[in-house]
Amino acid sequence: MPFLSLVSMASQGLTYDGCNFFRQRLVLSTLSGKRVKIRNIRSKDDNPGLRDFEASFIRLLDKVTNGTRIEINQTGTVLFYQPGLLYGGVVEHECNTQRSVGYYLEALLMLAPFMKNPLKAVLKGVTNDPTDPSVDQLKYTSIPVMKKFGIDGEGLELKVVKRGMAPGGGGEVLFTCPVRKTLRPVQLSEPGKIKRIRGIAYSVRVSPQMANRIVDSARSILNKFIPDIYIYTDHMKGDKSGKSPGFGLTLVAETLNGTFLSAEQVSTPQGQGDPVLPEDLGRNCAKLLLEEIYRGGCIDSANQSLALVYMTLGQQDVSKALLGHLSPYTIEFLRHTRDFFQMMFKIETQKPSEDERKGGDKVLMTCVGAGYTNISKSIK
Image (cartoon, rainbow, N blue to C red):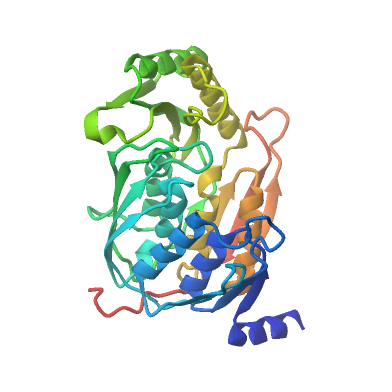
């Protein structure tokens, strides 16, 4: 019976309530071609309806697709979205400064390989803020995940042209991605041991010394574990430094098997709470990285849903990935994948034995790809 109801839902589209997991629903709708209706978007709120950053996200989807139909009621509490074809090409988008560019980029990473033309997107706005994954984190962790699925070559690039801290923004990011006919299945079950830690400490519109102070405090913790640590300092000046002052640190641990685990911390945006010392920020970020390593797995927690969407859309072959603790966002993503693609994952928990120092409980995710193929004619 549940399967029959899902099939009937597919013919008439899917309906959801509330503003949660807004991006997931629209991205999966675009990939599956199923229309979606979202009701009661903050209907009980003092300020009901879609927020500016969500409207900006819808505009971005409209730019990268062709023939998408979007209807929003007057109060903004109901959205009807009928996806068009993923077109790609050259796109420039002014992202809303309430959320960082990472909010928009995460969706583009999922959609980019399935476009008709290779995507070249220039996104402007806030590159680093405390809520969303920063562009640096996506560059160091998401790009390697994409390469594992066969999305690689010279066309794949993510570059910070200008940095823009919250709340003012003023940053600019260039993302280019080639298109692929199919994605290859993966077998990621052995993360391997950590071999080195890399990072980038950035500062804009503050003293360049801030970045050095962050590096010293982060090293004071990480040096106890591994000697091969190099943290770059990046101090952008002039028009490349955006409109607001700030600093932050992104750390990435690389394993022998090519797994990248990351953590990051950003200073409190100007005028939004207690200022943070660079020493505390460096130490906290190092501890967050150790926590991420403890969680472990072959995909870090920021990219779980990206890897799962690629596994879902892969060739009709078995894909396996060992993940750390599933985040609530990922769990909801699995539910949505079931709604849009009727795709169920086999989930096995793996508890490390007492004598093995392998960190926390792991989850082995297995699925058979949906055999999703990019039907565009332009792919050679």
